[in-house]
Image (cartoon, rainbow, N blue to C red; front, side, top):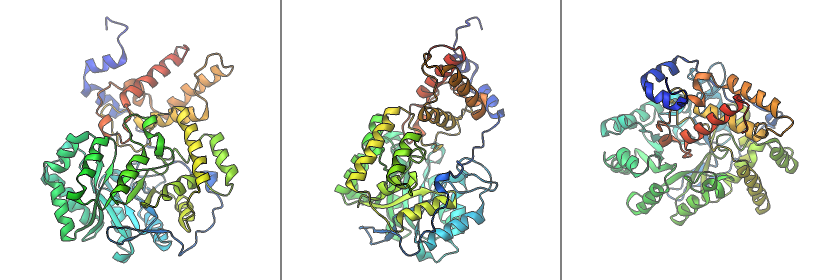
Length: 468
């Protein structure tokens, strides 16, 4: 290399994708297990039976549990979650969780062909099939994200396979998955041009789909377009991201996102019930900085941090159910305690949560939910791992950003050690070449290469002991 000042990013582009991908794949994979149950979940009371809160679907009268079970973080053998690990799902544990949920009134179970490394529908079907069919509503999706699956043939194959995996002859709630990601071109390619949306409407008429809707991520033009077609498609429900941070600050955190207030209000205008995803923002609202967690604890010492977010998400009357991906029995019990019975947040509590949201916005963290839709990176980058580590340090106030701080040298050393221990060197931000393949898959519309470049430069300055 004659030009010694060439950046790593330019160098990687010059040697080609194949070489880098080979090197990346040889690196050790960070298996990543779900966060250990914190002390916040110790000594939980036993949730009462027969006190689950329900909402009625105005389109057909379904009586749906306000707590819905998201089957995207199912436990695996050896511990952890199938969202982070390729290990085999612990079916006995899944059965126990589903049995306990149904016993306590949960009747909405949400899955997808892509959840849990492709294992979720099969595992969900095994667990639910042991119960009478009228005891549960099952929701799944046409998750044909890859262009190779956009053809009518491949999309039909995915649709038919969901029935086999779930062991059902009808699906209660069926969704177009991830509407908005990739814009109108993506919508047209996945659902319109191949005739799949018209086919699904016909399937609803035939009774094989009882409710047809979509989950929204990203481009607001696509959301608005589909709602403008409500008279044609008659959406029975729409799944949106709603929590006390995104209600008014989703766009402020990331100008590509849309505030939940707008999404919810637009659905309410048309009488379309909302199914809520990300009430905890991928865990961000249960893992608050210590000083914010302390504020919540002072107001309700016996309540968990997570329960505040779940109460908020379930309060709007147009909400049909609030989804939670529960790996551990402790998480399930805590959520059941929140909804059995349910106490909506008061106006005063709502304002208090908006104060917490304002504090979070001021931290300027990266709005990553650790959903892993951006993975796998063709160059082996651990995108969610890098963002999670950065946000954790940002929230804890341990980012070494001020050389005048008397603790700067210690914080700098601890940060550099911790990033190397958390993320293998070949999977860190400096290996990103800015190919942008990840961006269209991010539900939060994060400018991933841009953020990777910022973190890479930040770490590089730390290593040179420069001013950051």
